[in-house]
Length: 171
Image (cartoon, rainbow, N blue to C red; front, top):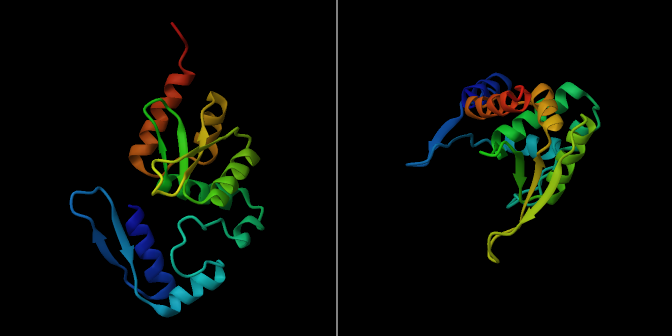
């Protein structure tokens, strides 16, 4: 569903039909286009540099400066759909190798009344550190479900199950 939405937006706005790639044995696929003009536009409009940038990404100032709750909630939803999860213990997490991105996500979550927790994790010396914004408290998880939520069906179902557990009366 996400891929079809992305593809239709790129086709509508730029007249480009994305190609698809799926890694064998993985539950993940990618849409991509080869268009220098589009690359140049997105890179310049959103101030994104060339080359390896996984640990240098951030929320563009153009988006943060809007101070629009609906746009920021939609951005967070997209980030959590792509690089977020809800664990078996019911913890909602967003992860990135970009410390700045996680700090910004935490700031925006706090703006909506959530109390995220910052965690840094290093799998091994050869890897970049992984930073996470974790939503653990019942109140923050409820706010997340109301304001941000997931669009990804499996993540949405896990969040609904978590909400049901924390809101059901103890018998």
